Image (tube, rainbow, N blue to C red; front, top):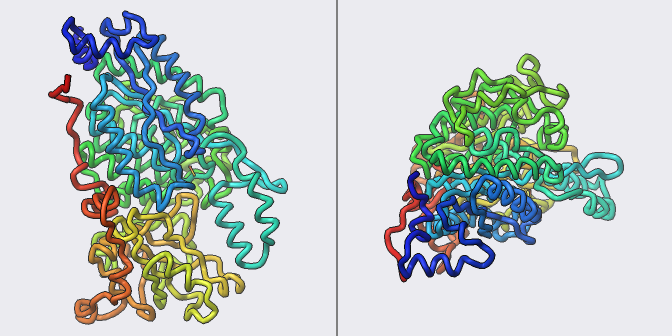
Length: 571
Ligand code: FES
């Protein structure tokens, strides 16, 4: 049997092998170094990432499975990102987390890794890292929280915060009532229970083939999560023996399967930048246009918030991901493999819909075309995305006067100004929110509607932004405009009063002014000075090297893989 990678540290009788073994002998028996695989549990548990705080218990179950299968499990706490707390936006730190995790996986004597994630950026960062190191890797999504209720009604965390806060601004809910709902929002351990980014990325990790089939979507508080985590521990030992690395499993077909799944579940638009970034680490030719070409005609089968009615606990009860994928099985690449070594489609046999309100059949979809549309035009030469399923149908073809904000601060300062020149047909444009401009591409594109329009019953408007939108939000929002304003995109040139045309069916997004006039324009001084120019540290490195949203917003020098080899040693 070929020696494991960890044997490069532990095998032999020389001084260095002595050092490596001796310092690890705190509880590890001698046979831990007899050639068994050493498995890292890359653990994003943190008290400051509430969605992942339960992952230490999950890690214990993984450990038991690893031991049982003859491996040595090793807990490896890694950078953790809590979506609700981390400032200025967790997305600024996704690539930093991915880089730090990649380097620690490579630097340490491990043969395989179990990736424990949950909250939005954690699974993407873990998968980006694992792809670049290319060690056998399997994800355990930490799972959604159980459904909380307030006054007898279920609360979708995230989504209902936006809804209730808009009600307060509209004057239909008192602030005291709003605050009463706060302690009901988070009922249990786990991540957001809508089809937000965390739920989406957990499910897509499985559709990609990187999760034990049947695990994703298991609620965090469900005992089956621990049972399947134990099984995952056993599986990773088998993966090491079979040398099932990300590059040997994942293909373009795997990513197209994930795009089909994204459309069918009505998942978060954030999946676009995350899947593009993961594919970039593997050298797989995935383009933003693939989301439209592959996903646009996939039917929407899942009726979950933010655009629908139910929550993740309902989704799991109704049959979960396999029930959905079975309905669209003919759209999946039959050759795309999973961590089991078998194709994804081979695992769908037991999938069944148990509640046709929550998960629809292919014959009776919620919407016939569910995917993400990619728009181009003189306002977005490199593309922008919109999720038509979460938009108002009457706004999908709309011409309106732009009301422009240079930054999120500018928007907050003026959005509720009674003097703001805005009406229900206006188009709200916000820039300075892209990867470089903010920096970090925050989830602010679903900007609040002006209070004076809310009071008149307006509940949606076309909004355009170079930032992202929370996966728990909804509305007619055009996101990820590229190039962003801070990278010289024409979004920097649009002025309040210009007419802007959104035509989703034609996949167009344009400023309705003559080309010569647009070409002659320069950004206003206020626009240029709104962009951050960090002086030092991670933010400086990020701004100088981050790529645009249409390629995944990874740092240019992190794209690709350098594998698991480390040729030098300091002792
Ligand atoms: Fe962590 Fe929503 S805040 S998943």
